[in-house]
Image (cartoon, rainbow, N blue to C red):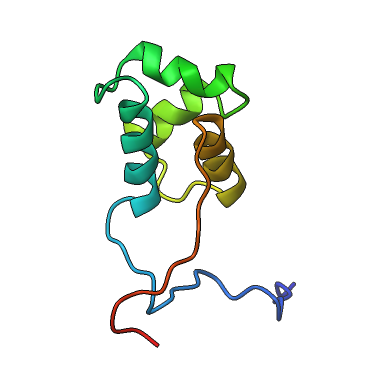
Length: 97
């Protein structure tokens, strides 16, 4: 029997305006926020600050920073940043649009 194909399944979507080879750059931004919350050092204590304030778990953060996670979900990134007292904003890129 032939396998049915779905018209909504587009496979991997790649955008020309947002390309990275290894990990999403926002992972590095969150790593910097976590380290800055601990005087510039990324320690176990710094990682524990995030879930204590309502953000993702320490194991989630470790998977971002040291594991195979390449594209974390937006809501989890937002929760981590907000747990550290930050919010994201959209700003105009230089020379674009």
